[in-house]
Image (tube, rainbow, N blue to C red; front, side, top):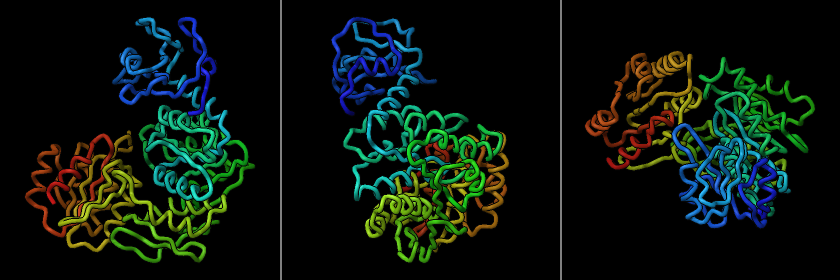
Length: 446
């Protein structure tokens, strides 16, 4: 974080200081007392299951120089406090105003699938010529995005930030904070569809990013996506670059070789290798090529970058041993699960086992999409299907290839007694099921 005066931050969040002070420079912003540093400001956020106001005293004991609190916070203890109406909004206001102080160009990324991988590829591709930064991990919400922006310094030339959502207006709010010069929409899928009437509403919500583009206002879109034309019609005067595999685009890719844990594709006559088991990540690679071309990054550097990046935690990590484990435990939605299963079917393994957890946040579409996946699996060459949770029982009932488990210990017992050397196992489920526990169990068994 660049030096910012305390009085400036107070002005940004329209706060009221509880006592007189001598102005000073702030060294950082923190919302977590577990990693707060000396002379940082602690922002006390309040959520459904936590209240940062309970940790204000601890923050000062650990070196916080001031704390931003909601106006009704009572326990002062002579601490330097900034009272605001809403600490979460204050964090966003600080992020927005701090972004305006920086000279960096911003690339905003949203979409239903592949945001984190696309973000990391683009950030690393641009590092050939630019000092880059990006979203910390997958901190892509109203807390993580402003914190990611605040950690940038004036040395940064390009910031690559991802934005997630589960309701209308969130992308507008987040893009208002980061004010992107360019943006990428990876695709319009069914993730979080339980909070929307239909996919068209999801497309509308993702397109909110267009309203807050500044500067050159260049947009990168997936030509293969069902909602491409719908999004394109919303762009009006904005520049558009397209990527695609199935349909002709500005940047086209064609997969020419596929291994167990990698694939090679050709783009504009050049070969690119990606060490991902799931070929749907070609789209992340193509967005990296498109952005690289825009910023005149050499093809060789882009190719080397794509070959170096590997799947991130729970997003297709591979463990090889007596059994072959594909860890897709981080999250699941109908699109990503379908793509994973279709890709899994094509791989050459002795015996294929899919362990599938519930897909969350589907609302009124819950039964429909679990039934849809069950019908899909019935016709796929996957030997055993084990489902876990509550809603996914419909999958195993429909496909008739295995059994359902409500209890994780029963699932572990079954796996312990039935796994054979040479088996390949795909594990995928929504975040709330914490299916990494199954992954870790399987790793311990091999």
